[in-house]
Image (cartoon, rainbow, N blue to C red; front, side, top):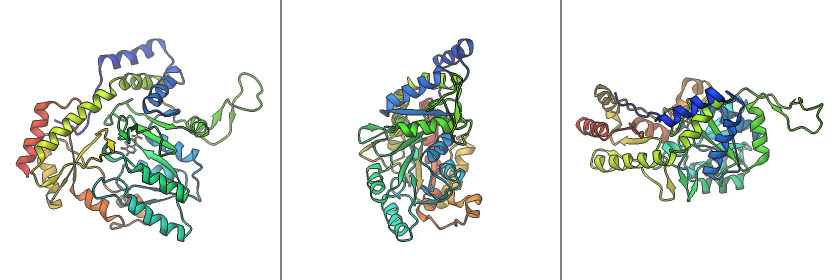
Length: 377
Ligand SMILES: *Cc1c(COP(=O)(O)O)cnc(C)c1O
């Protein structure tokens, strides 16, 4: 069986975790800060907050930016449900901005048009969450210009994107955003089992995210009863990540660039071998270097999608579909969204297939994927 994504664990990774088990703190110890430091230095951000998932990071990011019941948050319909659920956890209203038919990321023209309309109705978003689909950056420069003009904050959902860059800066540098969030679920680029990280250049946001991650508690207080003293200043959560996981994360970071290079090599081979078939291979922006979390093809004929997907399954190739547009999920239909609301995302979904792409994919396995696809088309 060939999965669409798979983690890659080395003996060094195993040794790093065992070393914590034998000698270290299991949680709230120094490995958490080590992981935050190595990642923030890698991406070029001042601060980082590690948590038990990217979903938790998105939630604390929204909370730190003050998202509450009176607020509106916009994201891309072409994402995992966590991108918008995080705003719903805060009691905010969620809406979506349709995607570009070229990049499958949030369309900045659609964003601008929606902002003009929202301003007229006095319903501007407090936060916009662009999602870097498949590991390729959104047009962040334009989104930031619109943020300055319309006064919203930006959280990048970079769950697919650790190791990628945009305009020669690493994703996560927050050059064009307030906060950037990564995921370390095993199918993502590097893993901690479950886990996530939020980066920022704003010390105040870092402090707030730290607090919301751990019960709303801080030891950084104006007046103290003594060395034992802490204060709960907000209603926070237990979203902490363990030292075991962070030891794995630190170890995985050492191979991050290697992983990305391998993903690019595999993607290049797909590009070459699949050209000429009735499908589109992924468009690459000239100002971005993708982390290539996913290799998403678009079939020319959507009517073939199911047959192709099932044909791959029969050949033991577990392709995936990313993503069912969030607004078409029953829960979101219950919030008033309808099929047809974001037609580009829906058309994209009907043609999309994510082919296997991960550093351990062998040449023979990739050949099998390519040949099976050629046979089916
Ligand atoms: C994986 C993913 C998430 C959630 O990440 P977790 O670490 O599993 O919580 C959020 N957004 C996107 C786009 C994702 O792919």
